[in-house]
Amino acid sequence: MQTQPTDKEEAFKNYDCTEGNSFYETDKQKIIRKLIEHSKEKAWGKHRKIAKELCWDYNKRGDYIRKVASGWKYDLRNGQGSRNAIRSKPDSQHHVFAVCRVPDCLDRKRFSDVSDLAVAAGWRLSRNRNHVLIWDSEPSLGRVQWFTSGLVMVHANKTAFITVPALMAKVKTLLWHCFVETCLIEKVKIVNPFLASVQWNQHHDAYDTDGHRLPYLKIETYKETHGFVFKSGDASDPTKFEFEFVKIPYVESLERIAETATKTLSAVSQVLQNKAVTDDRLAPLIEQLNTTLQDLSAPKGVKGDRDRRRLYE
Image 1: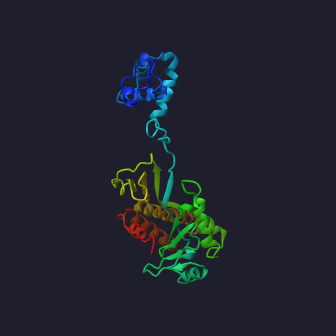
Image 2: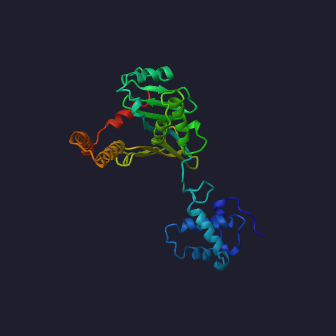
Image 3: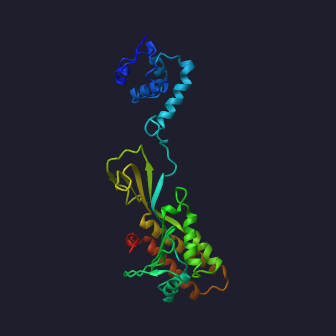
């Protein structure tokens, strides 16, 4: 009768498939051990080779070997009980921002009384030189910043989201509270396009690993071209991989130029459809179109970076 060795590694070293020492290893562990040994080999014929080395009949155990091999291949830690390696969404999010622009009726540069109306409705005027209006009456939902340029930046609180990734409905709820319920915007035909224009601007996505602290690493190779930075072992999430996504500034500029060009071309089309076309009516539209084309061909600015640095006071 065979006795159990005291050292498990010694038992694996002396393991012989012909003796049937399955007490020390399950069939799944045997297959995974063979997969690790043959990890650099091509997949063609690997399963038959494993069955032969384990002294198994491939016709009877081939399906089980393929099943274990498939699970081991797509597992994050290769069959050691962690989550699946293919992630369709992050495990957690923070530093979530969404942006939009206020309607023309709330242009703070054109109408000087807009800021006073907003302060009377519950907004707070920053003491900084940029004169940002801040809505922080609902910290459970987030914080809203309204710049004099018309840019509205919503900092969505991560505790406000039950699901990951964050829901746009929560951001629109916050905008509804600070613009519609305060009576700054009352008409439905203005509210609907305003809420529909909200877009995600930046967010940090964190992905769980096996719980061990990761070495610190920060890759900024694609920051300027693609707008994201990869980090691992950060002090805030030492056991997670983190991707910092920021919308590229020149993409925002191109979107605004494209929107202006669309409105201009639409106005030109309406004027040309009218039979009573005069040079005096057409000249301003042509001038506006030429200005738009000049902006489209102008160098990429850094205004987006300056606005983004003023996230908080």
